[in-house]
Image (cartoon, rainbow, N blue to C red; front, side, top):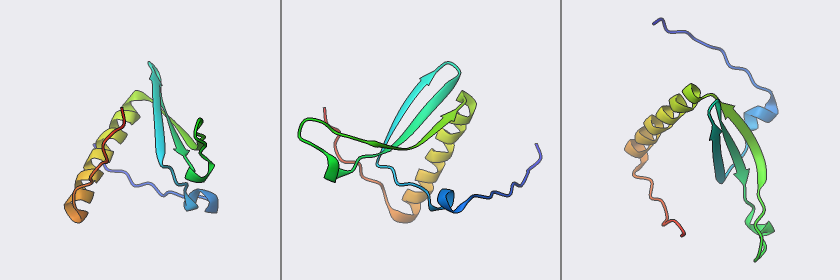
Amino acid sequence: MTERQMQITADNEARRGGYSNLALISHRKEEFVVDFLFVDPQTQAAKADQALLVSRVILNPGHMKRLFQAMGENIEKYEKNFGKIILPPTLK
């Protein structure tokens, strides 16, 4: 397999990126849908939460698995450099 190089370009809005503090993942046989959301604590009410869709990424199963592997590798590198990521307890 030969190694290829790719030049990536982006407009200013895409380069700024978007902040997400919640992700929802759904799937069917042909694809995975990853919704990146922002939950603003200032807009939350006692009875109902609200989230803003920041971005939706649709991936085929092969790309999703490669993304999963790449994320695991990057988390390992991050923890090696900066220490273990501690997750808060999950709510039940």
